[in-house]
Amino acid sequence: MNVTTLPESVNTLIVGAGQAGLVLSGMLSRADHEHLLIETRDSLGGGWQDRWDSFTVVTPNWVSSLPGFPYDGTDADGYMRRDAIADRIARYAEVIAAPVALSTRAERVEPIGGRGFSVHTPRGAIRANQVVVATGSYHQPRVPDLAERLSTRVLQLHAHDYRNEGLLPPGAVLVVGSGQTGVQLAEELQAAGRTVYLAVGRAGRLPRRYRGTDIFGWLVELGTRGAAFGLGLPTVDELPDPRLKFAAHPHLSGAGGGHDTNLRQLAMDGIRLGGRVTDIDGEKVTFASDLSAQLEFADQWFDAQMRPLIDEFIDRAGIEAGPDDRAAVPFAPDPVLRLSLADADVSTVIWATGYGLDYGWVDAPILADRGYPMQTRGVVTGVPGLYFLGLLWQSTMASATLVGPMVDGPVIAEAVIGAGSG
Image 1 (cartoon, helix red, strand yellow):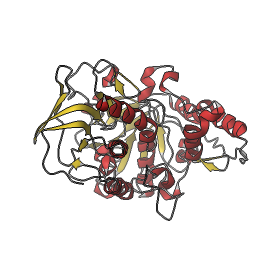
Image 2 (cartoon, one colour; image 1 turned 135 degrees about the horizontal axis):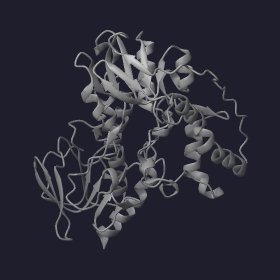
Image 3 (cartoon, one colour; image 1 turned 30 degrees about the horizontal axis):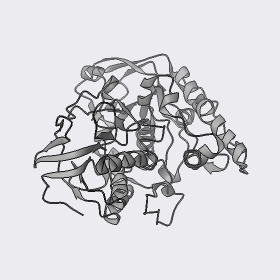
């Protein structure tokens, strides 16, 4: 339900009415816990609304099931486009009658001496006993400083601002970054007839299907049933380096019915690959001579990180699964080491270089390396009543995915409800 008049106070304020905030709202409503969600955007649908026109989620449609709102479409094994997934999130708000104030940005969250918080918005301040920050983990488009040295002749934009190929000037395109977004955009642009160059960074690759099942079938099984067999998804405590929370997501695609995105295959299909961009001098771009190593990393990531875990789950759970029928692509492309943008007719550079966190509006000493909040399972250390939901690696690798709020949400809901009744 749309809240048009902000209350002066509320028990719990949830900042962000995307999927994470709405899932928590449903949990709080079922416990009759008073709360309000505020959302910067003027429409519901979460951050999905910010993606490019043909964006397709990498998770099968059945993964979009939410508490009290199971997937109700006709293609459970298909993959939703941008508008469909945004519409589904908006419909969920209606299903749970979430109390949402749209067009309401949290400009500052200020603790009040252990007596709650004052949340400042352009529409006035709200006093809240507890605050849950559910604004996701993709806030500020991140572009390297090298971008400042690019020729002004060339259009450059972050992937966040890309909408479709038809809006770009004629000519070839250089995509920088080989996580999910970069690889998917490179594919889209080539399919539209563009000559595409792709700067490859350190990112893994997931197979679309493994042993007869969509890869997310195994990941969800591990997350929901793995504990019964002494297994589970990798947790934040198991990361060998905390900086890996910010690593690029392993790439695959839901477009066109879903498929693998093997960089070697992309090269065979005509996309020119280079290593990391190391220098830009106007029209000249220099790439590291690390393409072979980056391709090897992508090739081995699944077998090193996930396959043993999935195979062990299959064995312990007694599941009859097919063989590993992944096809190897042995092609070794010649790397692009230097590129004259003018000679190659490159008119556009798309920076698919990820996002930075922005929690500077939370007026409390809670931020650690790269602006990541100091918290345990979303509960902030040292600031009673302040919580986060939807963080990268909040508890497991799934925390910032579609299923993340169902993993971490109950922990936050229990803490919020317990504190509110104490």
